[in-house]
Length: 552
Image (cartoon, rainbow, N blue to C red; front, side, top):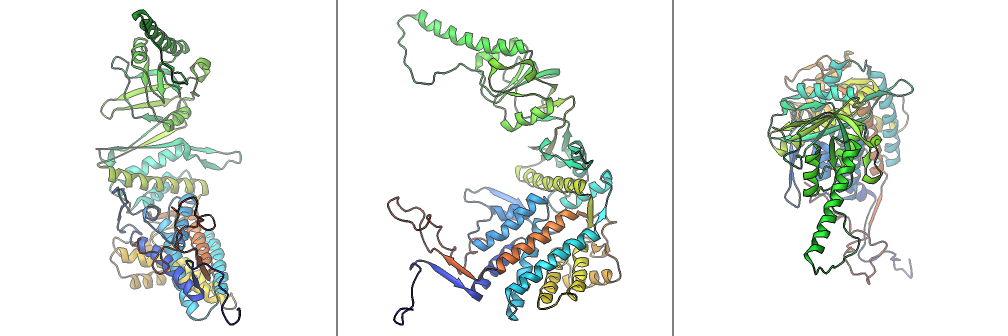
C-alpha cells in the first residue's frame, strides 16, 4: 500500500484468478476434458468425428487421438491431455480410463474442498491411495506363462474390442500374437524383451480387414523402374542405395557456349558414360536388386534392365532402414566406396494384384503386418486399434501379469482402498475414500455406455466382490455380472498401474494450484521493434472464463 492506494505490480493487460476461483476454473477445465472422452469407453463406446482446420476428418474412439486432435486452448486441459499421452507412451492403452479417473478425482476433490478440507490434505490422501492401489494391483494380478498364446490372444482381443476392429478381432489377434512372437528376444537375464522397432505396419485400402496378413520381412509399395526388368529374384544380393543414379550436377550455376554440334555430342556422351559407370559399379558389386531412396535416370534404368537388375526408385527412408534388418544390408550413400559386404541377401517377390514387393531375408528379425480395410477412415482406425493391441501384448509378454477386465479390478480396488482408509488418520482418510469412489467411475461408465443402469450394475458388482469374487466384472453385452477373466476379458496389470498413477499425479498437480497469472492479450505477431513482454508470452488463458469453449 502507498498512501492508502494499492501497489500495482502487474500490467493492465494481465489477468489473475486466485484461491477458490482458480481451483474451480482448473477443476472445470479438467472435468470438461474427461467428460469429452468418457462416452468412448468400453466395447459399446461411441466414436468421435474430428474435423481439423484443413477439413481433414478423423473418426475414432481412441482417447489419446481424440485429445490430440481437439483444438484445446486451455493450460489446465493441456495438463490432463499429458496424462493420456504418458499413458499411451508407457502402456499403449488405457488412455480414456486414465483421463476419466483424473477427471473424477478432481470432481470428488471439489466436494472435499467445499467441506473446507485443505488441498494439501487431499493431495496427501490421493498420494497414499495411489501407492496403496499399486500394491493392491500387484497383489490381485495373475502371473501368466508368456508362452500361453490363447491368453495373449484374449488380451489383444480385449484391447481391440469396440475400436472398429471388432468384426475381425480373432483373425487380427492371431496376427498380433504371431508378430510379437517374431520380435521377442531374451536379454542377458533371461527376461523377454519385445522390440517393436522390428515390426513394421503397412496399410492398404480396397480389401476387407479379414484379409490382413503377416509377412516375415518387409514390403516396398513401389513399381520397377523399367518394364523389361525382372519382377522377382530368389536368393538375391540386395543393394540399399541412398544416392541418385543420375548425372552429377555442378555445385555452381554455369553456362557453356557450344559452337560445334560435336561439342554438344561430347557433353551427351560424357553424361552417358557417367551413368554407364554407375550401373557397371552396381553390376560389379553383384547386386541383383537395387532399392534406391532417390531418383534413377531414364538411361540408367535402361542399362540396369539390360544387366537384368531389378531396381526401385524413390523408396521411403523408413522402408530402407527396415530392410536393413530384414536382409542384413548396409545403406550405401556413396557407390564408389561400396563393397560386397554392404549387400544384403534375401528373396524379392512381386504381388501384381496389390502392386507390392515382398522382401524376405534368411534370418529376418523384422516382420510386417499388412492391414487391409475398405476405406482410408476404416484402415486408419484399424491401425490405431492394432497399434494399441500390439503395445498391450508386448507389455503382457514383458511384464507377465494380467487382470480381469470389465470393471472388475476397479471395484475390487475400491473395496480394498475403503478398508485401507480406516487405517489412515486425519482428513486424508476422506481423500482416500474419495479416491476409491473415483475408481468406480469405470464400471459406471461402462454400464452407461452400454445402455444399462449404472447404479444397479455397481450395486451388483459390489455385492459379488463382497462375496470374495475378485474377478467379477460386467458383461456389457448381456448386462450380467460374471467372471470376466474366464470370459476372456483380460487387461495387462502394468497399464492399470500406470493409469491410476498418472491420474493421481495429474489431479494432485491441478489441486496444488491456487493462483493463475496470465500475461493477458499479448500478441505474438507484433513487429520486431515492439517489446512483447518476457519472451513474447502467449496470449492469455484462452479467455479465463471459457477457455474450453472451442473444444466441446
